[in-house]
Image (cartoon, rainbow, N blue to C red; front, top):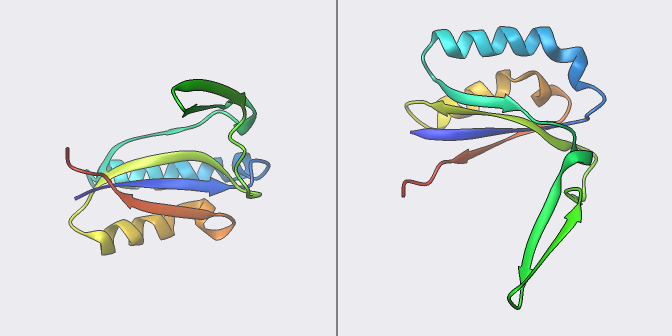
Length: 107
């Protein structure tokens, strides 16, 4: 099953965790479970798009009501949700922010 592990963390803390992320990333690459993933640019670079009544508007920023921001993600292919949760718990930001585990819809 494929899952996306969405990493929410304090943007000021992420650079401190770089060596831990490299270790975790290498481990899921070696296990063959990692399909993809990237670190995202800061929330200040985001643009939100909304369409209401056929009219498109854009605004700067994500405007999320939280102190943590979406800072990156991993896409994994694992045997079940339990394994996805196990991997999410190993992501360094799980100790300071949170990791949302979401199944990828089969289209």
